Amino acid sequence: MDTTENVEEAINVLQQLGLKEYEARCFVGLSRLRSGTAKKLSKMTEVPRTRVYDAVRVLESQGLVEVQHSSPQEFRAVSLEEATETLRDQYEARVERLEYALNTVDIIDEGDNTPVQQVWALSGQSGIENRTDQLIKEATDEVVLVIGDESLLTADLVDSLNEVVSNGVTLIIGALTEPLEEQIQTKVPDATTFITGLEWLHSENATEDETAIGRLLLIDRSTILVSSIMPDSKEEQAIFGEGFGNGLVVIARRLMAQGLVAAHDPGQ
Amino acid sequence: MDTTENVEEAINVLQQLGLKEYEARCFVGLSRLRSGTAKKLSKMTEVPRTRVYDAVRVLESQGLVEVQHSSPQEFRAVSLEEATETLRDQYEARVERLEYALNTVDIIDEGDNTPVQQVWALSGQSGIENRTDQLIKEATDEVVLVIGDESLLTADLVDSLNEVVSNGVTLIIGALTEPLEEQIQTKVPDATTFITGLEWLHSENATEDETAIGRLLLIDRSTILVSSIMPDSKEEQAIFGEGFGNGLVVIARRLMAQGLVAAHDPGQ
DNA sequence: TTCGTTGTCACCCACTTAGTGACTACATGT
DNA sequence: ACATGTAGTCACTAAGTGGGTGACAACGAA
Image 1: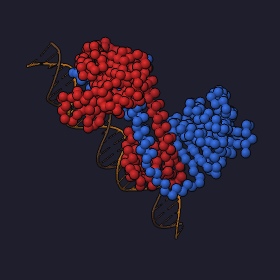
Image 2 (image 1 turned 30 degrees about the horizontal axis):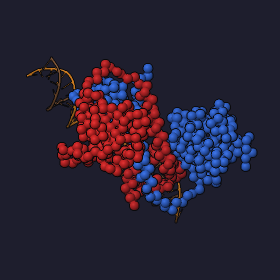
Image 3 (image 1 turned 45 degrees about the vertical axis):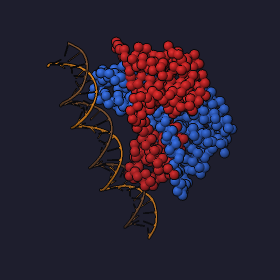
Image 4 (image 1 turned 120 degrees about the vertical axis):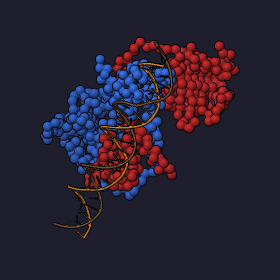
């Protein structure tokens, strides 16, 4: 029984969702208590009894807890489904407000001098994921994708791939292992797949703690995104360049032509 | 042009979504700047230049901003669609982690002595909304609903109503005004509707600043939920009781039989 | 070299929040 | 009625966080 572990997890997540520690502890406590007074709650959650009242009041105002105004008061958590639904609603409402507000804001386009060699860095799992999907959807000719880790083959990604391939875009997908390649074949049947030798991924300059490659994406031979996964922090980091003349893109194109696509595409 | 107003709104919402003030300002700034350096950003957002770097770093790690590591560095916000998608993904992931964690947590069901007269209070728009839907879905015989304000007739609510009515549950819905009644008729055709005289809603003990009634819900004559909307704070507050013998429910049943349903249901 | 710019740090101040205790009102049993 | 433990509010402290500012070294362009 890893109950305590999950209790901790729940408390942490609730804090990430915006609750304070006491509030999170109280909610989790009430969730496993069916119904309780301040005293009981305080005992089981380590929240000072006198502060349970504040915490519960906040929870109540957020629709996560109900209160019975007797003496002593009784508190009860709403059902888990109600709670998550409420949280989702609140968040969705906020995101929509954000969308509206930012859409109706003037963009100051002051003499934008787009230099030449732009290489952008971005990090964070979900951000990179979205950018990947975005780029794939914008492709008009060719998408070359190498996936370094199984977990990166998300449903959204598969959708984007199948969507773009139906527009006549050539799709070339590489995998690191054979089982992964098969997975890709079944999920994206119209793609040409291949297995990347580890050669240049774990590569010659293989230092010591191998920075695992995450994704590698080349769109229309003019936009490139490469991501790697930090061995310790598990954080995904990516660099990203656009423009046919972009240095990064040029290098990527060359690498692709040589080491990757060679066997399947005699390459430009 | 209410640009500045919307900028403020966006900043506020972003903070509600978990960003710090500087981060929010920077993101909004970058969103309208297409691309910028710390200096430009600082000028337009009022964020101290030396703190722009911290803020942007955080934003980058959240996948909301990309960074060009040149000198001077350039920052760029991801597109609004990418940003909202990323935010949604992150939140959804958290809620799911929460669901999992709480589902695998033991419930301590210590000799639960359910007393008799339980009346629970809950507040918060979305929480009450979910509870309403929940209760409606659980109905087996009859649902009596009075809606005090048009804004409360949400899509989810309509869905729940139509779902339950298809299970053979009698549906009686009251409205305060005629247009509202018509709306209900079209959206929930199988319901019996009526117009509630204002009599007992704005009622005899009409003090001064009328506490507007929000919802009034009676399920199977044994569960009641009444909500009102605070005139100033606009906060919705509700009380809720279960059990055929529950005092609140008894009173509600009596009220219903007399003042409300009388004309349509000779009522027990 | 020189001077403005860029980026990093270290710091202060105000505010929030975790944690504690005083005190009043209440409820219970005798 | 009384006394004793419980319930609830409030006011306070201490620690941490976040907004705000300046010192300073590294850099880049005249």
